Image 1 (tube, rainbow, N blue to C red):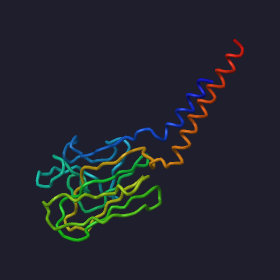
Image 2 (image 1 turned 180 degrees about the horizontal axis):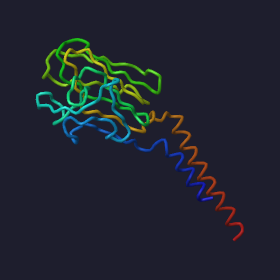
Image 3 (image 1 turned 135 degrees about the vertical axis):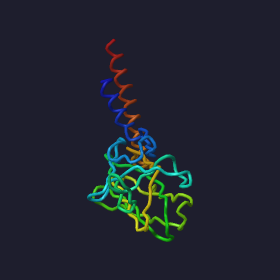
Image 4 (image 1 turned 180 degrees about the vertical axis):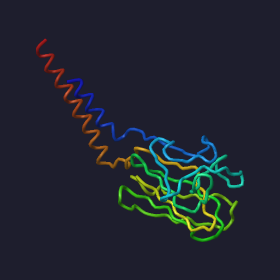
Length: 203
């Protein structure tokens, strides 16, 4: 009986368990490293024949040093091909920085997917100042993200850094969910009281 009650409590509390936040800045890898599965829960890739590589940067780019990532091939970066992130489990609170824009206006796009379903897209808007402030690409409006696709039309391409996301975070519980949790506690408490009464009658 006690074991089943404990399992019931755990199942009620499971949706409320804290999520795990990840911050990836690539500064723990040597320059020129091909980035794939070095970070738990996410795989980095690019278009066919291209890779995602760490690239050294100067402080003028304004992101964490010493590295950001660019697309390219082993031995050289181009920064103009797509960068893909595939998450092992759905994530939320996703955002990252883009740097190195040479033109102003819309110079790229970040699209998020849940499986094969497009959740939405956010434009990457440059100001034409290659060493200007990093562009924050805010995708926090989307939850349940399993894939991020980043593309750019900037002539010299873009670099990306300081990715943040939260793994295992579901939607915030609604009032009905809280009512269900409280109701579960009341039921368990009632079962315990009934068991105590039944036991005391036979003592």
